[in-house]
Length: 107
Image (tube, rainbow, N blue to C red):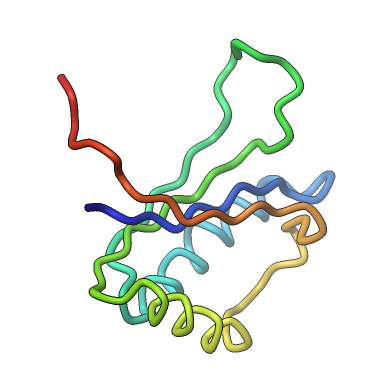
């Protein structure tokens, strides 16, 4: 079963380029240094949408490989204070969820 740490977020107004540069070139690599995190990918909201008024423009998905997801999350929380955060990210409006696959890939 695959497990992902997902982060839905937005940049601060007028700081989208800075947000994207920091997230892609600094933050992803920092999180991947944490034990249990093995890969990362970022997504941007596409146009058009089926449902308008989406609350988040960006999604980061981190794949976790671990026998103990709880320990991986503890590793993340312990490392959080040492991560370089950017004021270009709207930290007042972030949604984090841990999700697990229910099925394999269906084609």
